[in-house]
Length: 145
Image (cartoon, rainbow, N blue to C red; front, side, top):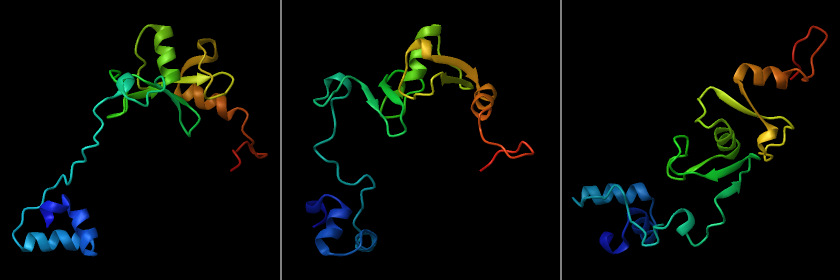
């Protein structure tokens, strides 16, 4: 029944029991349980421009930033291949890769405005000072929550 179901989770669903219970009973019966589970035949084999749902390689994330498809970039997210677009624009402008400690600041503070003239390279200290300069403070100069 396990080989027919294809995975422990599917077997558990068919039997109406918890997945860990099914796994325990299979082991008790001396049946070897596959760790990787069932491999769907729908696995994605085409990535990037070859994928049927390709929309140009740039997407707008919920955090407000634009991400660009750059699978060979050292900062690309593993498995996905996307990098923050403003960092790529600054790297193209400078002609080199950015260092880990370098911050790309949006001058007009619009997260998806990645025009080269709107971007400025700085370190974390300068970046925080710039943002905290306008933050509300109390009479002693301490930041308000």
